[in-house]
Image (tube, rainbow, N blue to C red; front, top):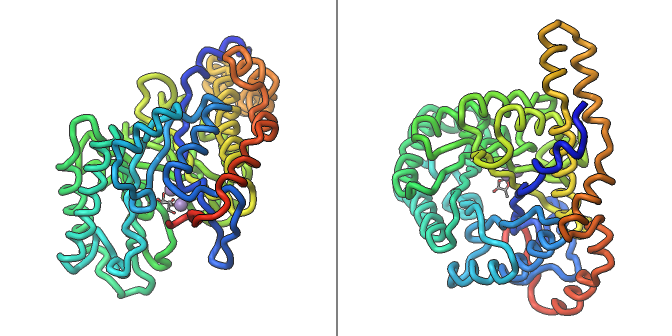
Length: 388
Ligand code: LRH
Ligand code: MN
Ligand code: MN
């Protein structure tokens, strides 16, 4: 039997990066709702992210998306973040909102447009040098809508060449993580649709290039924990974009749609050495809060990750191995389910209090008055949206 007390120390130091864009307004193609208190600047997004960290102790870094978080002085933005108790993390490139990229970016047939996309990544690396960020995250909207529209092989070859040029600019301490997604906005083929393609591309680059797994980017029914296991086994799981989904790339609160799937993923993360000191795997959220308040939405998400991490750590691995090797099908399954069904919320509340954190960060946020204060202070000005 594994007890909470025996795993408590392993929860120390867990870090889950927050996406700056989670704090802006977002929506669907039907409507973007505005919310009082929504940030009007990169600084206000960071202040909100810092609030999540202050109440949970789980979110010490904030990911930027360029040019959504374009500022004149990134070093100053980094200092602003530090003053609020957090630092700037992953820099996400964006080659999906410019007319030039209608038919592709790093895969484009036109050398001028492809160079523009490569130069954008060079600019992102310059920003990383100013912020001290380790990871450059690349997700491409590149793909085609109709069979015959593009030469898939040629596009793959150009992607490879573009990535090599970007990779060559990284310092020894920096990494490139390549995110895959099986559809959207392209609906016939996507140039990096799956972990295999991402793996093939990053393997050709070298040790500093790894795969980013966004939990919302697979076909329904995909066994994501298998992919986690395989990438860890191959030493190429660089990071997660955590969110949850019922249908497509819904970007809902982590663990909301399928807490059991989140548990199964974290079991494989722990099993494969992807958790704890020295692990190369960066935990990040990639979410949008369309109708719920954004700050408590982020608090709920990091708490859900922490809760499922605790349950994953509770798996009695020795007993599990014995049952697996004895062919004890139901016994092995029972051991896993015992950990999944263990309610760790009270133990985690006490664990937080011991560390000077509120036992219930959701309640502490609601009582803090922060939401009312930002609604008053930020009246006027232009609220930022996902994509701005
Ligand atoms: C693409 C994606 C990618 C982008 C983010 C805004 O669907 O997951 O990570 O950078 O959404
Ligand atoms: Mn993502
Ligand atoms: Mn996505």
